[in-house]
Length: 452
Ligand code: FCB
Image 1: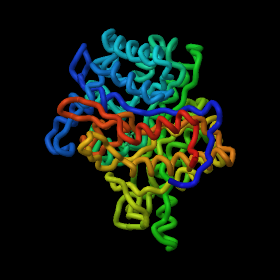
Image 2: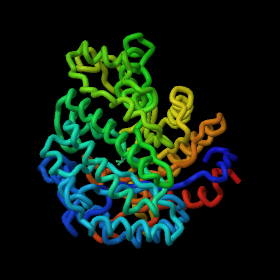
Image 3: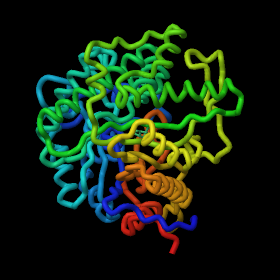
């Protein structure tokens, strides 16, 4: 515990976050279609321990219990995502009413318990039928996304006032289409850039529809932003860190806020033989549609070392001089303060939320059945104080969401990386609030971190 006297602004929103595929289970129920994650997890060897999200936290059936736990902890805001394939099992065409009804029930339950919904429209689980038509590399997928969003806006627009179009388009593009460790598991850099462009177009189309429908509320996008620092003072490492920043941060921020991809990255990619995305007339205007807030997912800093053989970016990530979490991610809270300040200076979004932040550590249940995860508390405390510092310098940060409400299916690492404030017993589906959950509940109650 540091000495702290960090009182947050009055209307600051405290929350927790989850995503549909990571918690819901019931992947083949009530008319849901197959998603790319359903398909990907069932390919042997793709996921740690061959885990899948088939059951996950069984939240589809236990959402009332989960809402009750949130209420018990006094959590005021909840960020969750909608599975597109529950609403349109094939991505477009006939609506599956039962899928929509689930989200109406869940949202109603939240509102009845005084919890404010923050809805992500796309957290990576594309309907497989659309993947079969080219997925995000096909520009038509963006139009289908718009139609899906319009359906959800109509159904839930009266209840939900905070919308996020996409979660982390960089991860969906590059982990999904270049490194191939995430669905759909492709390995083609140019395809990843094409997918990224269509994801951004999809975002713009959804924002435009939202405005045209005259809905009350706010809409934004969630990016995973990660400061890049050179591994040494060598000029080649500094250049590599600048390229890595262009690749991971500016490639998405610049089109959203400045109307173009970073020119230096375009020419760099061209020099490496990468095929740049096809930009049609009006695309950049569409992508730059005004948003009400930017959501930031922050976990760590990327330490970057020049590695000329590594096509196309010529760098690799190396461990920095910091302790790491179970995931191997360095714990560097100053990265969050610096990032938030940089976003204000370089992009000036009207409002910011930290839409995800948290840590995976091995959790041990003691003989009393408690999980005393002080190390997670330490991580959260450092990062919440980092937010406070940014607010003090004038950053319009309006909320903070812990990843995650509950231990869940962590993509390619299966159930290994547990981030929850609530422990999940996968055999029995029992939930146990960890010490970090109680701790966070107190932070919320006092609206800040105080040493007394
Ligand atoms: C983010 C994802 C989220 C979760 C955390 C640990 O990249 O948005 O679903 O997996 O990482």
